[in-house]
Image (cartoon, rainbow, N blue to C red; front, top):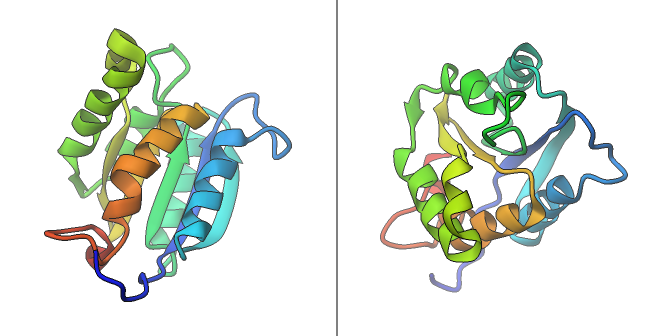
Length: 166
């Protein structure tokens, strides 16, 4: 990376949970703070019930908002019966970033072993909006932010990044 200032992106942070509140949304707080520390702007924060139709509403509103360039979400990507983020979001994507989930699981394996296979995180584009759906733990969000998202949302990262496409 060079020394020029980072290009600020306008972002949304969605927390997918049936139990979290604004008082205990540690993973959502981590993502919002990380985005802001990197010079990006968080225009929207929302906790969304893990219901396929409520999720499609929340993601669709972000996708349709011309100001929002990036959506980071936490939660709802596990293998539990009630986790439905991949099913809700996958159909909204114009193009999937297939390597995102693969790279995340590889990095996660180094920290939590074979349990990494149960992560169904995903990334992609919809209407020009970047979307990355992460697991619900602060550790997983920190891992994804540090090793994938922070550099890829910085236009100075070479040889390529997503910031120039947002």
